[in-house]
Structures are given as structure tokens and as C-alpha cells.
Image (cartoon, rainbow, N blue to C red; front, side, top):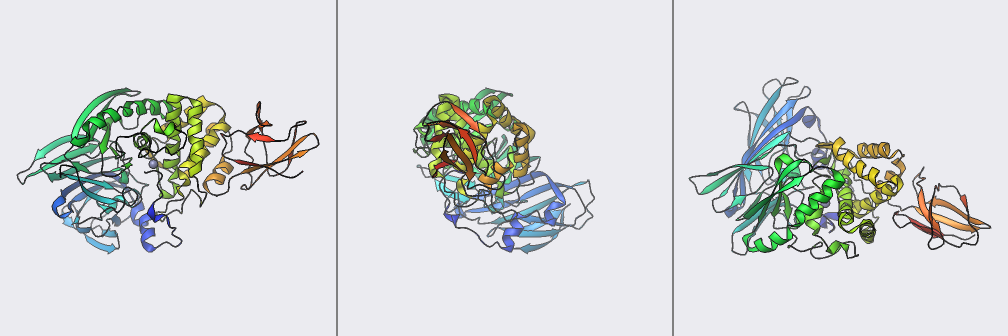
Length: 537
Ligand SMILES: [Zn+2]
């Protein structure tokens, strides 16, 4: 999702509730059926901030089951659930609804239910970090409405299977709004219908699997323009939607989009959703990686709201939201975490995409300075991986520390072409999939030909930063790792003295010796996110 600013809800959960378990676990009532298709139909009524509509959920029966869990958060209410036109019995447990199906569910069959709902959805307090619906206005007084729900969950505004492990193969999104407004959702706009009741209906269709928080509404009196990008997989439609009052500045600023695509297709492979196009849509909050309709609220300025998160100057040369949120098309929308505890898979790689974008246009040293500069934002407060099965995110260090972990692993790989092929390989191997940390770790270890497990353990599951301790001895140095997890023996590049030729050493937890006469210090290559310390002889 988002970016830096540490969410207000950063206070830690130490105890999890029954509701957290229902939200975050692949419960038996979720596990037996596999999402095939959603058709979300929703009417948005700004005048009283209500939503009403239904989700058709088409699913494949994987194993025997008669009770389905569907999620919808209060204060919205499920009105009715039907299968084959017959109303079903529903038991509510907080934000979860357990639907008892009347007819036998045969393994291998595809079935569907329709869940009707309505109500006033939760209003976002601080989007996108504390999400929900945003009811805002443009300068001319027209409605400017959006959804943002990462972490909170899509069930904050529509009924769904609100767990990230399962994605439908495709999705239709039909949105009815007052006739003077338009809705921009995900995928391609197939049809616009004018209704007799002074509303219009926008039919969007997503041809690819989509994660639930990626689904979005953006409703305004948008100005629109488009262009075609010639990319790795052919022609890609780029569509831009902004408030009319920002059209000129947006047309200038959004020139970043083809530049972004060029850099990211180079590093990560083809944009993962050619069939659905790419859209950049102005929203009444900072930004979010909504799949194929990235939302933008960075005020048409470079940097992150005009600031450089790396403190090096490089971050002022490009638009943070365009680059970061679009980077998520590869790492978040293409490769998606199964459990939000593994959110680093989205944010660490996307933080690193900022470095790679910088490197693509300003060279390798610039990219390295950027990612190293971001270290100032690392807190080492708690592990990056959160608690599984309770919808719990780990530390915000998943951004800058995660990016620096990847930059460190790149040093271990020691071959930029191979590194790039690994990044492209991840996007190919896990194309349109939901994944676990273990899958990413194993893939990267295999491709690198290195056991990276202790490195991932150190940076993702521990808060300590490795320290290279060294001490002068008669004709050189002794050195070792301290502050590390068991088995940590990461090679590291050092030079003797303050500068000079670098060499790779292989420290472990035991002292080893390096011959070097008359030299008093060791300097570690700054590309490695480690510390070093000279200790007494
Ligand atoms: Zn992000």
C-alpha cells in the first residue's frame, strides 16, 4: 500500500480477538471453496453516504462443505443471501456471516451465491492508512469520493471472502452514481448506461485475478485523457483521470508514467495486467496501488509530498506516488501476500523499486545512495514479519529496512544481470499468485545458489542489525559477526584502512584472521546494511 508515514494505529496488538481470527484465518468455512468470479454491483448515494447492492460470488467446490463464511463489516448489513433464487439461512458473528447452503455442494462443481447488502460504510479517518470511504469535494463543489481499504479489508465496503489467499479469476464491477459524476474502478470500462432516475451506471471488467483490497471506486467529475505505451508485451492502454482543476499540472506530471513503465519492465518484466490496461486516477488521499487503477494524491509534485525520503536529493527527481504505487503492480498485485503478516513482500520490493528506478535513470551509484539514504528511517522496533492468521502487519521497517535487506542480498548475488533475472523470475514464477515468505526465500536462495535463510531470519524475524567486530592483532585483524541469529555467516565486502581495494570475507560467530600489516581499521562496503565496530586488542 502506502508508504512511510507511520500509521496512527501503530500501537501494537499484543492480544488478538476472536474477530481477528475470523478475519485473518483460512477458516474451514473459507477453505472448502475457491473463488472463481465476483460481480459487485453497487449504488453509491453521496447525499446520505450510503451504499447498496450485491456481490455475486461464483466458486468452485474443492472439498465437502455446506457452510460458507462471507465477510461484511459493520455498520454495513447483509440483507439477504441467495442460491438459485432461494434465500439461505445466515448466522452473523461480528463482521463474518456464516451461510448455510441448502443444496448439496458437489466437489468439482461451480456454484454461485448472491449477497445483498446496504448501509452507511465506515468513513475513512486517515486514508489510506485508516481506510474506508472518503466523501470529499472538488473545488467546484462536486463530489469526489473514493475507497481505500488495505489492512482494514475490502469487506469494509462490499461483501467478499476477505482473506488475501484467494483471488477470483476475474471480476465485474458495476457502479451506479449520480448522473453528473463518473466512476473509475479496475480493468476496462465496458459500458456506461444512463438511467431514468438521474443516475449513470459504469460497468468495469477485470480480466485477471485481483486481490480484494485492490478493488476500488473513484467517483468524481473527472477529466480524462489517454495514450498508448509500446511495452514488452505490446500495446498497453494508459488512461488518466484527474479533477478538471488539475488537468494542466497532471498532464505535465503524468509524463512520469511511461518512464516508470520503461524502468520497471526492464527490472521486473512486462507490466502484469496488459489486458486490463493501466490507469492513474486522482484520489482525495495520498495514493494506493489499486490494481490497474493506481490512485494518486501527491499534488503533482516530485518527491513524497515534496519531500525526499532518502535525504539524498535523488528522491526529488521523480514523483514518489507514481513510482512507488505503480511498483506495486509487480509486487502486491502480481505477486500478492497470502497473509498480511508477509506484507514485506509488497513493501520491501516496492521500496527497492524506488532505488531501481533511480538507478535506471541516474546510474547505479545514485540508486545505491537512495536506498542507503533511506536507512535513516529504519526503527528496528519489532520484526518485519507480523503474526500469522490474525490479520496483523509487522513493523513499518518492511519499507526501508526491507529495501536495504534486498540491496544487501544483491551484494551477495554479486552479479547485476543475475539479480535482475531473479527479479524478473519472481514475477514470472509467481505470476498472478498469492505467496508466502517461505516461497520467496526459497526461490531467491535457489536462484542465487546461496542459503539465504539466515539472512532473511536476521532482517525479517529479528530486530538486531549484524555487527562486524574486528580487533587488531600482531599482523592483521581478527573479525567475527555478533548480534546475529544462529548460523548467520553472511559474506561481506571490506577494505583495509579507509579506502582501497575491496575483498570479500566470510565472517561467522567465531573469530577468524585476516593478514594485513600496519593497517588499523577495516571499512565495510556501505552497500551492506550492517554495522562494524573495532574492539580492544
Ligand atoms: Zn507501498
